[in-house]
Image 1 (cartoon, rainbow, N blue to C red):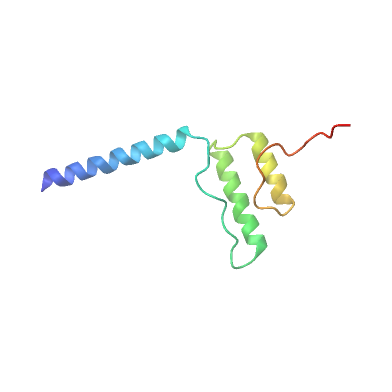
Image 2: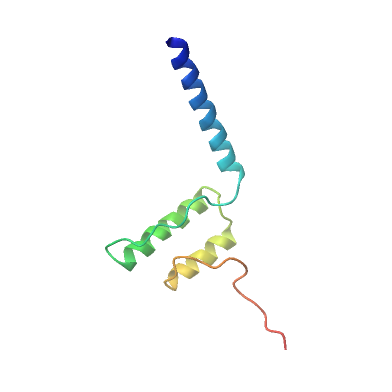
Length: 91
């Protein structure tokens, strides 16, 4: 019985190590921004702001992406469309 418990603990530790390694290596976010809270729009924007700050502090997004997302939050948008935000018009 002790061997089974030790093997199970080893497998769980190995799975956790692999998960953390993959999460740190990939730059893609695995979860969506927090959903709108029942209390309203402002708490949803606040929680999204905290989430974006956490992404920046943990090195998941760079400074330009952080500025882009915070600018969108300042305009009341919780999600930001992918791609460049500014485009030049051809004349």
